Image: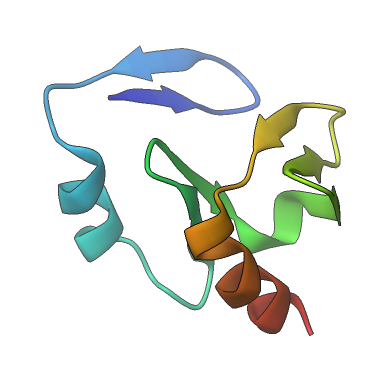
Length: 73
């Protein structure tokens, strides 16, 4: 798994599921089978894409989309 922070990228052997189980679900949300993001960093969702405040565009899976939208409200 790759972790991206504002300063650097880190690589770990831990799985996405293991990370998701350890993170505070009030602060982070799964948006795709391969992506977890901090809720405070989400700028908008349009179609099948999620935009972060820093301009990064990530795919958002149909399975996760409703939950992400609900969490942002």
